[in-house]
Image 1 (cartoon, rainbow, N blue to C red):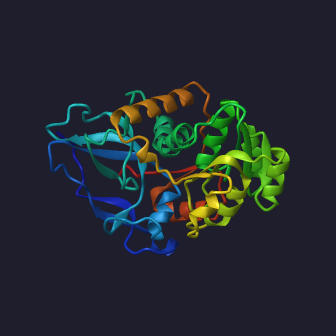
Image 2 (cartoon, rainbow, N blue to C red; image 1 turned 60 degrees about the vertical axis):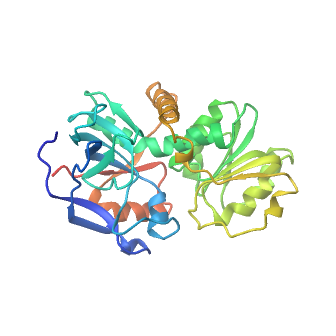
Length: 338
């Protein structure tokens, strides 16, 4: 069952790995079609911008084939379903996780349970928020429960504390009664982290380890949530307490240089490189965490603001702003409807 869907669409993609100049806005890319009974086509409204797009473009993370359409999350309206789809119908509004969402249309399967059905009354603002919340929100929520179970009284280091995941981590960790030590590159970003609940603020250009020692009376932090990668690995390692947990989840400065595992031994450090999908691999896991996330947002316990909305055709500028650390919080793309 479907409505009228054009044969071509507007997307943002890359054919070759490299810098920002590899980003292409294409206006005549083939639109997906229903090829099996369990497929669904979504007409996208908004799609959140995430740093992971840069990792694919630069070749840090592999892609299965090119051309590769960017995007990992979106909101929109179901416009076609296969005959075997029973959980969604044409006209339903959803927010979902999938690849290839920097596009007017994305095809998913009803076996892809990583979606949230939105009310029919969902507004344009709702679509903007829910098309941008899931990836970073679920990342933060699963990490503080699964990668390191944050407890009251813990001292926790949060890098890029004014970034998309960082702002959510700061809020959730502080609400658990832990002491958040926020690291960011400017006073404006540190002030923002403070407004979200950070107790201690450290300028990224200063002696971080010295300040962590002073804050923790030389004991170190229970955990470090590090999205920066190469440039901060040794700092995070040194900042950890005995039996501390190092959660490395980003590469904004580049991948961590290979190192001997013996570096972890003196303090019995636990090192993880988790990915979100490993924590929401079953329908039950996704439902649990997505319900929790939406409840936090809808009850006002989680603040989630869109820093800037760009048109799809301007994704290259959004990527430049994000990778140049000129932003704080979430960026999103407005998908053209014609």
